[in-house]
Length: 128
Image (cartoon, rainbow, N blue to C red; front, side):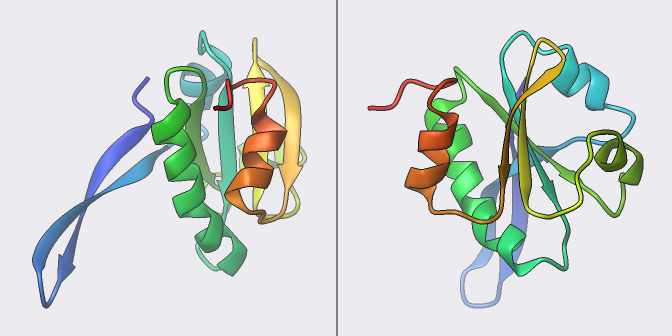
């Protein structure tokens, strides 16, 4: 599973830039991309209107780059995919659920600094 996918953005002073964004999953792809994964997967349940979600997006992208060989990191828009959010009881955003073997094994609620998220994910990643 590729955790990051390129996103091109137009910058008026610099032209086109390519950023890496987390792979988005949907109600339809969730079982395959998350539940059937051979490695643990952290799912960022987010909403476009949520400022805290916007703040931790780059943090999760960095975690995906740093630990992508140990932990998948994807995102799911709760407004576009309410069935999956409801199924897993997600009522606050941002919420990060870690799935292993098809089950939720960790839940992190709220925007936190990178070091705090890494500590919470330490059972699934080897910290330096």
